[in-house]
Figure (cartoon, rainbow, N blue to C red):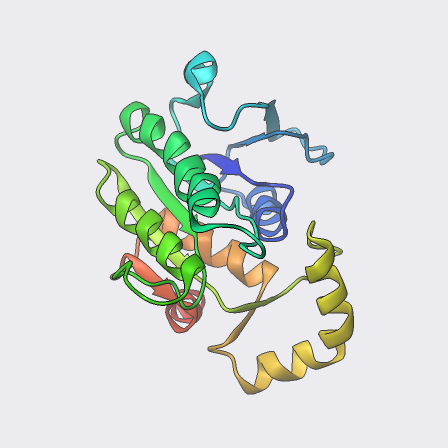
Length: 221
């Protein structure tokens, strides 16, 4: 497979990048982001692209891919719905639109979140915006899957880029493994996320929207 990753410096992005580089059937990985990952691998090429709203000048580099993992995301804290929509739905579709045109057979996997509102009518702003993003992706002419993880435990030295999340993880770290063992359908690791995303890229899944229990089912085969 030839794989494209957006957001490879984020926590989930680092996890799926690590799994892709270690997978025998992944021939090459290309990352797209405002900064390089710093990872070195003969499989890896990186496109540093500052304007994540416009890919017209690099379209030739975005063709011939079998799968795309889109893991870009920001916290909605302190943001208006308009701004959050622009930086969530807007940025996602700015990439997904050209990719669906350039790679008709691509599997596109979008990392959303538990509680996302597919009706787009609920009270929670971020959930409405994520739901709108998912719905728009499902209308595009490629096969898209929505991953909705809950709590994610970072492994393999992976850390969140968001300071608030880093503080939170330091506080709850002793509880994460016991929680994952006690509630496997509520907690996943970055390793498991990467493995499940790769598995869906390879074989698809019976549902297009995957909650944590469905992601767990992918891992169990």
